[in-house]
Amino acid sequence: MITAKLGRIFVPDRGWVRAATGVLAVLLVAAVAFGGDSAAVPGLGAATWYPPWDAGLGLGSALVTVLLVIACLLGSVTVGLGLLAVRRGVYPSPRTVVIAALGAVIVLTAVPPLGSADHLSYAAYGRIAAAGDDPYLVDPLQWRAGTDPVAGAIQPPWQHTQSVYGPVATAAQAVVAWLGHGSLRATIWFWQLLSGLAFLAAGFALDRLTRHDARARGRAAVLWTLNPLLLNQLVLGGHLDVIAVAGVVGAIALAARRPLLAGMLLGVAVGSKITFALFGLAILWGLRDCARPVLLRRVGFGLLGALLVLAPAHLWSGPHTYRQLHQASRMVSLATPWRPLVNQLDPIFGGTVRTVVGPLALVCGLLLAILLFRRLRAIQTGVGADPDGGTVTAAAARAAVLLSVAWLLTTPYALPWYDAMVWGPLALLSGATAVGAAGLDVAMLARLTVLTLAYIPGRVVGMSADVERFTLGFRRETAPWLMLAILVAVVVWAVRRPTSDVRRSAAPMPGRSLR
Image 1 (tube, rainbow, N blue to C red):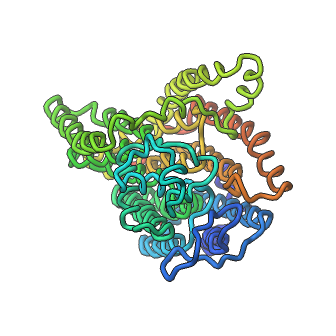
Image 2: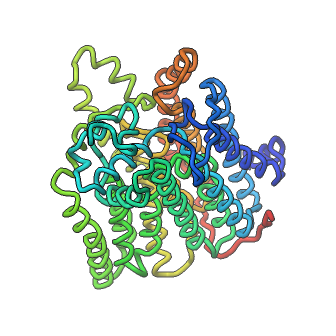
Image 3: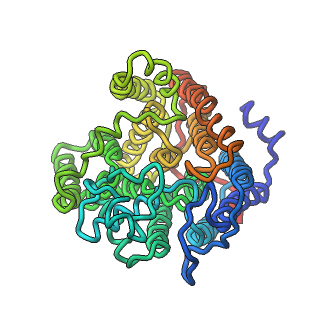
């Protein structure tokens, strides 16, 4: 109550402020991308009549960094103001959400990807696979002596790294490469279109799940569909995670009614990134209270659906599909709380420290999941009140939040777009209790903001000495401690008794739409 009153005093309810910050956040990142090759944007070669379009302005790394920092902070403010508005009973109208989301996706798929060079790796692996070679074994830069216009465009630090992605992801990359027909720009554009469609599909699924509850529907729009931070990372960034998230959101939505299709969608997610297998456990948890015959039928059809996708995909990709996973499992990224520990102990114990960090992180994740269990089960979801399907979906969504939060906050390797896995199921929590999901919302928003800031401008090349010193300094020296503080805050939130455990029914609540 005190927080809500302070919010009304210091953050007046003005819909145009939220709209302005959101639009400006999207336009700023689009402008940086339109500027062309820079410290944030890998060049795509000669301009063409088809997208993605850029002006080839050669923006300096300092300007690019400042613009992206401003865009990130504006995006974070947009989400925060949106959550405050939803708590006050003010929701965006469905029509506004559709128009704004479509507009943002159109703009962000018309300019080159920004924030990393991962999309060039996707294109390289797809090009190799489409040609009939094995991207899990072939050095992408040495393939065809490095002269291929698509595979040869792969950038540091992944130029000599074979694919670490699942066979479904590789198949999608191969199709995109085939459509691109040897053009780097066309290949990237087709990948962007796929990413944009996946983002919209996830948003549509979340909207359908929450359509019976105005508050939950508005919350889903704020946290996913109209979230500038996610639009930047997943649509403009073109990261594979958006396809996996769309798959698991669809699987959660259909687990009770269409288990075969749900299993196929889960197979798409797991076959893209293996970590999304966590959502299979969440769906099983959601089904646990079904009558035994119903449980067996749903689990059986779900497993069949997953096998229908994963079995042929793995037969196609071959025995080396997960060859790189062992090496990847020892990686510790700069902005996680584990990195300072590794930096201190590596000189003493050598590489054995990285071997121990992985299992230790799993133990920490399990302990965090146990702490989160009691708190999350007291939070209502915004899915429909169907006594069968709605119950399963609600339980699966809560379990998905629990597992993804525990995984993300304790994993040794984290990048901004990895957080996409939590935002889909998190959008289904209604936050109906007095404290509800608010604390978790703030923590995950702070985490995504910190990670986004830590990986600006995004590439490992093209930075001036001053920009590199500033950005890498934040990534190495500041971000890990902020991430640790966020982890501690979530632990405190998990063990703290809510001020009210009264649940709200799933019936529509009164509220005002912003048109």
